[in-house]
Image (cartoon, rainbow, N blue to C red; front, top):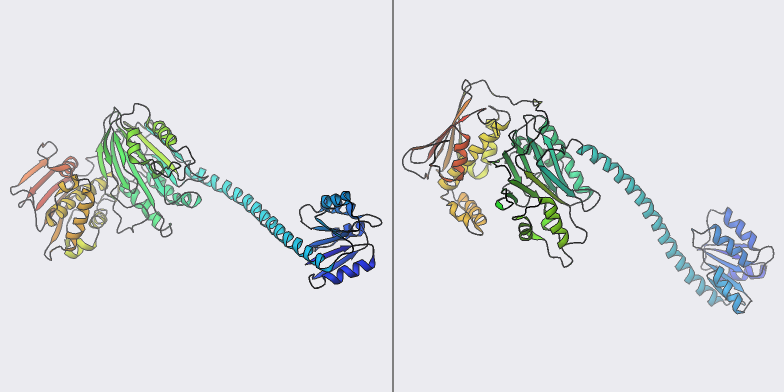
Length: 559
């Protein structure tokens, strides 16, 4: 403790110094108020307590106290007046210009008690002031950092195409920065790519997560890569970037030049919805993949869903900030309220949903909230350009077989291996995605219905999907030792054709041979229907345990 004693009587200076010697580390004395003011202006170590006589020559205690308060307003130094004056007016002035007073003659115990009490108060006050100053400095630094970061994110988003008719979106961050991401890019062959994503958390950490995803998306889009390749690259960039526990739920959409054919990859976002031209919900689009940034390149699956929409139909996607918006009681907006607001509406989707959720939870949102609406046909009028890096197509005839025994089926992601093999024939482009979609359906049928004996009707129950995939895991673990799948691939470069034949060791759903073509009306199941749409021919043989398809490269240019 540092103490300043201001008194014109030497005897008082010595008495007070002696009383406080056990408490104070340093004691400085002045003979009048002016000396005290001059000392404070010169010293580097201001006192913690000032004992001030009231009546002094040159400058009395009250004047000195007023000047000290004025010159050192940022520092709390308690001033205790020592006075012989005992009238009410003097007491009032002591408390007006100082913090306390002690009547002379001064008792030791009274002086020590008051000095200790005001010293504790001063310490607390000065500590609070120090923390306030630190917070103020920190706040200014954060404002500066945010301004720089906002500029960086604005530059990142400048590639987004915002004026494509049919594509509408809104994204509202819960803080300055947004962990949600909606980006749109022109497709060099005509059409557009769109990605809606939701990174773990919100604020600046979540926003940073979107940087590699957006860069990978725009880079691949500029090359005109297939949607599956874009999904693979975005996932690869995030796996190497995100810390453990962070990921990015996303939906990636590719719209062809005709504005109606759509490819979709969904991982981790809430169900999207397909609306008819009257605004009624026709179907839900349930994500079947893990969020981006979780699986390694070997584990990642780029299987897509392809469908053709009709004029007037809409696709609606959103992040969980919409359904998880909570009212003051903690109740969430939820999917049922979302469907009720969405179903049958004749008004634009985004304003309708925002009005519904804002009416339910007028308080500040706790999470980022984004909505994407695609109204078909999506007509992109931007000029069609050649992709920067066209896909490689092999000129060599290839005949090969991929064999998956029990151990391979239980330990490998089959389609990741198949895609890797096919990329040696066709390095990218929409044909690679479509080929993988065809084989994904064939492998799923052969494995789940052939080797594992699962019935798709299980999915029709309320918890059907969960039950179905639990059974799949159980039966896959109990797979017989002689189970296998074998894929024969014959590539004919002169015809640009791939002939692919998948053989399964058990199962089969029809005893006699039959063929499904694009014109055939005898299609069984959605998977086979999709395969027949994408391939020139589909033939089942060997009691349904072998399926052979012929795929024409370049024959699906509209998708």
